[in-house]
Length: 564
Ligand SMILES: *[C@@H]1O[C@H](CO)[C@@H](O)[C@H](O)[C@H]1NC(C)=O
Ligand SMILES: *[C@@H]1O[C@H](CO)[C@@H](O)[C@H](O)[C@H]1NC(C)=O
Ligand SMILES: *[C@@H]1O[C@H](CO)[C@@H](O)[C@H](O)[C@H]1NC(C)=O
Ligand SMILES: *[C@@H]1O[C@H](CO)[C@@H](O)[C@H](O)[C@H]1NC(C)=O
Ligand SMILES: *[C@@H]1O[C@H](CO)[C@@H](O)[C@H](O)[C@H]1NC(C)=O
Image (cartoon, rainbow, N blue to C red; front, side, top):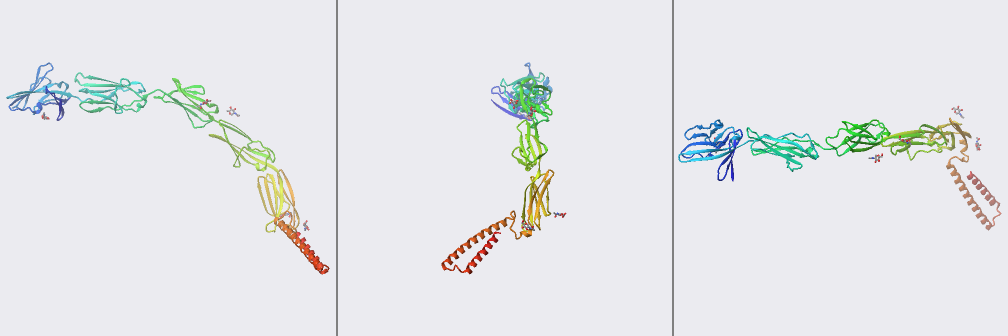
């Protein structure tokens, strides 16, 4: 079997030669002019008399269409039925039938009569009609996960031969498996025109991920390229498998905060109403998924739940913890204590979690909470205690003042570096800061006061021996001490006073040592001379004896002087 496809201008003709019968087939298009060729154009034999087109009527009787005399220009239409106005003959003897319809699908015969011969050529005519574009109708509103659902119906109309419909998902054909995909096609014929409509219904078992799937329907037809419907998508419904309760609040939750509880379910469409279990109390919210706890207190800490209205088992649980921190400190504010007293510091705290405590004194970090069994002046200061848990911080403080009667701890004197003044230092402890009163006038008064220790300095130029007193006073009392200060002028030649310059003392010690050494040397020398004289027998020389005694006297004087 071989076939030939010929194109005739505006219409398509396919020629099929059946071996044996040799009936050619041509295809015309519905509504257009059909050309039925006569022996493929080879139909003008020598001695041609006429060409005649005829067919066999449905009832079997012969039907003449037209005759064309070879010598005449015009053909004579002999048809009396519907073909009367629709048939004509082309120059190459092809029969032309306007407004092709399915009724024209039959065999037409061309009879060529010449002086010597009579030939008949039969041609079978088929009329094709391209279908309308496929349309998806009766669409499902949504698909249910895992459940076979009627997705839609694809329809093409007015085709000949009937069109084939193919359902596609994401451009891949869906194949009926009798279980998850069922495709049912029906073809109906329009009684007047005889054209066919094809309808294909798809039952489909969707999965959650099909929410992204694009469904189309493709119509295949002999007349040409595939036609594709608009793509359709479907929401996929599936029941809730998991409920989750969320606490939509910044952590940590503190007293006074508003806490929003949000219940979420993973089903589609999402449930719109929920049951909340507020520490054992059931609360139903409709058309929303939140429950708000306003201005919570520590008493609101506890277990919260939410569940589906129609399924208590589908539930989610959360612990809500409201953080709190209660702190009290004794003492606070200004604290006034006496030197040597004790002070008990007590910090009480009650918090939702272990609180962190730090202490500072005058901005310096302390290792631990301060304890005072015997207060000293250096204990005075600003004590700050920070107590914190996550998100909450409490700061407490007390300012400690330690008071005491002034007490002089030392009163000293020394000569200034240039030797022209005497510098008196009076050191005292006491708080509040004591005032000083010297019994003499002086210059360069200097005072320092640190941690209850006061140091007063006075520079004097004494012209005579003095007894100087230092008196320190504050509102609680006073203390006095005296010191003797010798005249500067007399002192020049005098032995340095005990408490005076240390260098002076060192000089004295060096002098004594040197003196002792010299004395020892002298004794040695005298002994040596004595031995020498005894040997020479000059013992009785008074001069020499006196000299010796004088010398020793002088040395003794020197010795005495060095001792000063
Ligand atoms: C006959 O003539 C028509 C034009 O009049 C042309 O389109 C057609 O192809 C011809 N048919 C054959 C079989 O030669
Ligand atoms: C919630 O608190 C309870 C005790 O009140 C405890 O048994 C449970 O484990 C907690 N649950 C969570 C999720 O922390
Ligand atoms: C701490 O606070 C809780 C909650 O208010 C309370 O029940 C408890 O008695 C408090 N404890 C102390 C020691 O104050
Ligand atoms: C100290 O000086 C003041 C005035 O300068 C004077 O009144 C007072 O008598 C002086 N005191 C002594 C002890 O010299
Ligand atoms: C000062 O005191 C010293 C030692 O007590 C004494 O030797 C001296 O004579 C006194 N000077 C006067 C001016 O009183």
